[in-house]
Image (cartoon, rainbow, N blue to C red; front, top):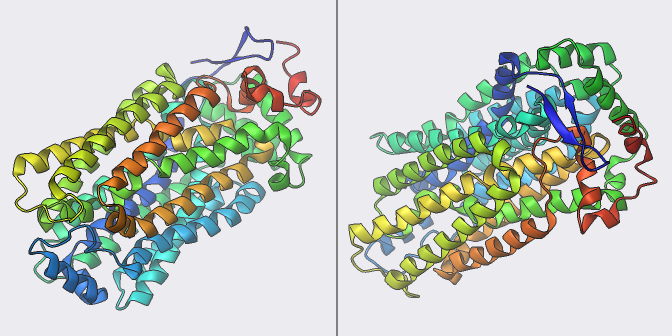
Length: 516
């Protein structure tokens, strides 16, 4: 299956020989398991913090407040506690710092070592949390989990973008997001059953089972070869060409190999990729790797995912019912991601970005109205009818679907695929760092924001969804079907970004299109 791309001339297309091979698919599935550990953690946190035995042991003041509020007083504020939110958010601060170190390791030693290290540290964090006896152990475990996620999220999306052929890069890269949703769904399932354990130790099962996805990712990473791009970048040309042939399933890979070599030579001239990323010609990529993860977090989706049981419990569901509702939304998240995988290389990135934003905007307004009408500003819903709660769950599920086939997978795919090789590791670290710092901020502030802003919190996020739709409409060009080493060409024809592309600095890249 050949993969075409638009040349700098503007109309012709060049095809790289190749086909979809089982080796490539299996390799991408194993690399995508980096999303499994991230998703499991997102899903497990909210479920554990809604379990009474967990709150009694580590956060007794929150437990007492919840019991006091069970009679119908202010539901918005009963989970508002700095230490409880630190339990959730400390992971993302650790991931932010770890991703910066991962950039150096990924570029210097390859994508595989970063993935292996991430799996090992995440496994250690799962063990510490599973055997925790005090809040300090919980936080230490969360920090270790965060380091593992920082390394995995920095290297796995880059790995997928480099291995996948242009024609199928969208669906193969989205395996990372699919694994995130599988991790969330698995965590919701485990939370649902562990919460029913009569021993009251179900939270240990939930936290300790994080070791299962860690082992899957670790073993998978150990079995993976490094990417042809990384091998060539580290001057292992023979090995890089051999891997490229295996991934493409054909012997004739000269054109693609030569393009990667040229990109690698350009990358070697960049001694300081971090400062180089600030150069004018990389302005489009820098803006995208900052604003796409920023907007991804301000959709409010991660709030829904890692606080889903707490949120459903707040709006009137019982403990088991809240976990069941979170399980439903997790299932919708997983299925909707499959829709995007099947269509993104045909419909394109822009279509799903914009469709998803419209869908999320409408649903957030509906949820805000439903909660506002019933809870008002007092936070006392009185008797909450089953049908009314059902409308809220339905609206949240439609919102989750909108995210899952748009900003969820595309938030990892697009930043990873638009970065030139010479700044790819640094750019991906910026992407992960921005993602994690705003995940940390949202996770740390959400329960307080819910207490202060009440139902207006959903309107708050809907404003950002509206703004990000405008951003995508005006500033993101379509990148489907373009080989990863040649995406830089799309900025030269974009009405706004073409002014930032310095043709003189891009002479080396342009020369390889002269014969096309």
